[in-house]
Length: 434
View (cartoon, rainbow, N blue to C red):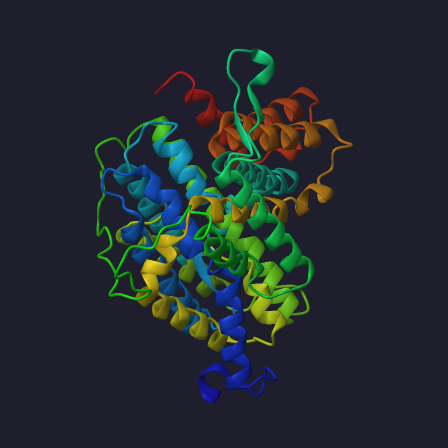
């Protein structure tokens, strides 16, 4: 390990890397509860147990690729926001089957592999204006928080009046009250800089839910078992030639790429691994690891896998090499044996995690240039259209459309690149061709 990961040159040790890997795992282990809970709502064969297995294995595969191929201290798992888009927009909103949604994820992963292998990803990254990139992250955060608030019953659909499209729910409801307890617990733990605050908050809330009668443990229940079989190769290619499908496909690709870029830049900079020009070491291999994880995840039956910014916690604990990722990947595999614990976790315990992750994703809003209307208005539309239309895709569409129209109207054509023009025309066509 010393020779392969070059631990001495990075000023680290095997023990420190393993502790860092465990720290990273604990900060992102909440996905093992949130993802099965969310995708499991789809039903029709997509069960929480199968999604849990797919989530754990896909996370381990992608993280081990990152360990051995890119040798970076970054872990991967199905992305928050992408799983929300998969469930609430593509399946519940557009009416697509989960098999077709998995097909979109699979094809996106294949294209991501191609773009990474031939160093073409920069074209797509540069196609989206910087302010719009930040707005998409903020909009996804609001969307995730909105879903969490609804799942908790803190907000509910209004009835009988246009003045109450949504309104405050009954906070004394048992499930809603438990969700509020969970949210307060996560906020306190995070404020105290406790590693794994979200995960600990979910587990703590689940324990509280047992005496409250929300979670029941059947007689003979065991916290460990052999993993449930995943949903292998459940693809549907019957309806992939349409502009509607392209929007879904592009949104998966877009968010996956920028999630990965943002995480790689942030975590490697924090770890002091970038060169004097700010370039990421073995960036191509890191992108390939992300793409391999997405393809594997789709084949196993889960939404898009992406790099996790929570990896910064492991870096903060001293992780500097791929051994940190190797350790995190091992813990994901170990978690496979404890599926009954994660499947037991109620929605009232995972909803606070969604709300809090939404808060964490709001940070880029301070960097958006709202003083320039041609930059601020598209960013604003991208942000608000995601929660209001219940669709991440619509936020991206209206952000791109308004950006091109405003830049063209003010004769700032030099700020619109070729790829952005192409996306503009594709998104216009989608209104006429379904």
